[in-house]
Image (cartoon, rainbow, N blue to C red; front, side):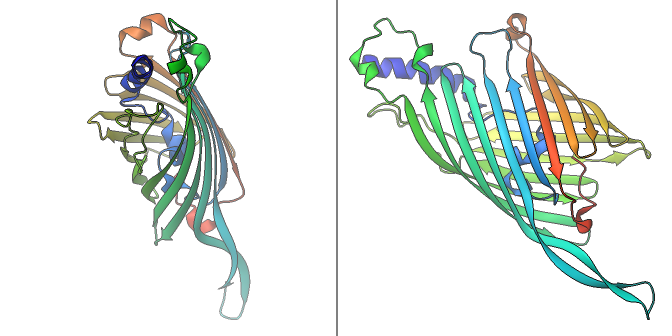
Length: 324
């Protein structure tokens, strides 16, 4: 009975915070939509490496934090097409194309005494049209859910019931997504935790702790004001099967396709300040979350840093795709 009580308190605290955050939370999802939608893997044609570090509620002890390293690429194949400036003069030029995208995603997400360390492997398939692209993606996921004994304070540290409980659980899962992109707009839908795996820490009686599915809708549009200025509104809608709904509504100003700033309103939680710079194929982004609840009085806010490096050339046929 005492073992059940200890575990129920710990998981109850975790799930209360995680009812809308059982999976890692990101404020700069536009910089790497692959973190939310597996269909994005390889959609640009580049090979890209992304590093994200997010520290939530800085100033509070054992506050949540998320660290992610992702990799995605397009499997391109070499082909040749015949081109000519006149009827008599023709030449064969190289062209790169391919329909398969691959990706990988390592993450470490901690919330107090609870930590998840996992990996996703992704396969995506892209259908190219005249001025747009439709993509499908599937990720297989494996992660370890762990409770840190060092952060648990018990009235009886030597309690055999607690010492006999499982402190780490291995969980398999899967994600699926669809993504559509054109020159000035993009939209996608995805779902994670498809298997709704059971989080079983003790021997029995804990099957109600289930990793629930989350559904995402993402979309945005680039309004080109002039050669130097673009206004980009976008939104992320998230719905969990426990009935929780969350929306991120974002507006960004992009100057000369290299510098940007913006604001996001996250329903009921925070206002987020966004800023970033793009230097050739290197992208640096920063987000500062200002909480809309009393916890802001006791912390220095939430900070998120993102770095993206792109390699190679995106194939000519993909040049109409979004910049970031």
